[in-house]
Image (cartoon, rainbow, N blue to C red; front, top):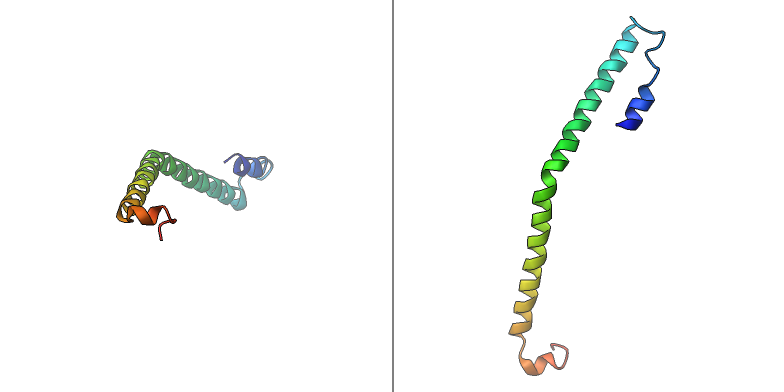
Length: 81
């Protein structure tokens, strides 16, 4: 957002009333709204995505434990083969 605003800084100076100036202002506003929407969506997804990552990690540990349990004890001493 900062780079976008900096890139548009001063563009309208001396060009008030020109169609190009109005179009650039409309484009700037449009992109600002889009980026705010993306920022908000990312903020809303942070907690659910962290929960999924935690759950996935726990599930992987559970599955790995089941594999170890299914290997006979004598095979575990030989590297699981």
